[in-house]
Image (cartoon, rainbow, N blue to C red):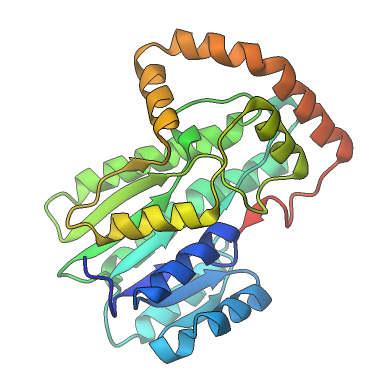
Length: 280
């Protein structure tokens, strides 16, 4: 797809990865509809990338609510042209063992990471271009590998990956392409200081949001989109997990004491779920 002058709706635009994607695509001449909950962050980003001059605009909306989806639907109905793409980037990342999670936190994580992108994608489908249009779902390497301390998060990303695969096949005879982009650990406000310290101690590679944005730009620009996992060690590990999961079980068991120690530290600090762990 040639990105110049394409109209793309981006959720999670007020978060670290979302902002990096917006900057990257704006430089390619994409007209963006930026969706998020923080009017202040969205408006600041809009001024930075000169959004109005390009023909894009901001929508302040909580996509986990019917009212938020109505805001987006109303805006799309008012457009005089179809969308060329949808990027589902909004997400929550909570580091906690299942036994320590509150029910409300589990429900919120599933609502943001699973229910919201499903309902939004369903709503957007009729508004997509009949020539060539794209849907990209931002997942995680944890969408293909279960990791201690992230059981609920992993479940949500496994669900999003399955949704992406099934939807791609449902639309296989249409003009709409669907792909799943899986970043590895990324340096954003989604991660608490405890998570950053754990990644450093365990030697986990951490990318900048710009790395993810670059991968997404390349994916959108391709003639035919393909699912992608960022980072060759992660791709290798995912492959082993799919063939010989017992090996991964043993490898992660050796990390379990450290993971548990950091999870207990996070719980003891009683870190807030917002804004450190949410990007809407």
